[in-house]
Amino acid sequence: MLIHELLSSLDIHLLAFGRCRCGIEWNYHNVNNYYNRLFLITDGEASVTHHGREYQVPAGSLHLTPCYTSADFICKSGGFDAYYIHFTSRTVGGLDLCRIQEYTWQRRVRELDCFFIEQLQRLNPSSNVPVKDPSDHSYQLYHKKQAETYQQRPPKLYMENMAYISLLLAPFIATGSAATQAEGQRMHAFATYVEENIHHSIALGDIADELDVSPSYLSDWLFKMLRVRPIEYINRRRVEEAQQLLISDKLSIKEIAGQIGFSSPSYFCRVFKNQIGLSASRYRSLYNK
Image 1: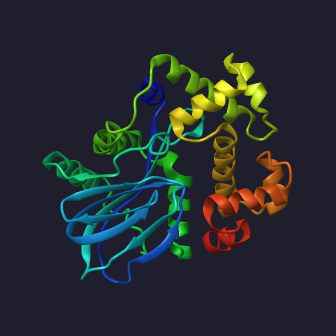
Image 2 (image 1 turned 90 degrees about the vertical axis):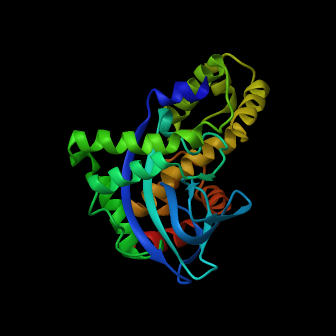
């Protein structure tokens, strides 16, 4: 199974956990970050839009917004209370578990979920993001520092956080499409090859040769698995790398384009804007102040 192949190398990092009360000021559009967001609404109702659909998230619901996905977050009613969890769930080749398949992004909360949330609150009493606005410098700086210092946390805390987040994620993951073991092994090989060569030019024929299939078969197979073609997948991974570099490095956009394997800065800028909805320079100005 594809998902089993990827779970064997799953690494979950908790970046933020907290509880908040939001009103009409919770109105943010085209939010796109490198981490996943999990909301548990305890009172009121929120509105979240992504993947071409608007979700009404009432009290008693859990909603998952995957990383590297443009989303709108809006409070249309009198306000709501919510717990929030920001985390990454990376697996082989830098893939994030929440992005590898289409899932049912919203579900009703279970009694067990409340227990898991309580445990995360106990373990992480000081992990609140200082502001609500995703474009605010303090908001971005907080997540950046959390990511940089994660390895300094006690192993026990890391393992317990990963366990409780995994238990909250499991019902979502169960709604994803399944694949055969052979397809899982092929996906592992494909993702590994891309990751190892992402900083260089990658030809479709070279990947096909590595996987011992024809280029046309590889393209159709990947589209069946992930609903993207190989070049789109490669460019998506490159843009993910670029997002990290734009907010954490002082390289020029031209240097970033070359470092992540784009043939020209103009092509990189075009791909970046098509995927993110913002130019690379605008993204940097918003998230690396």
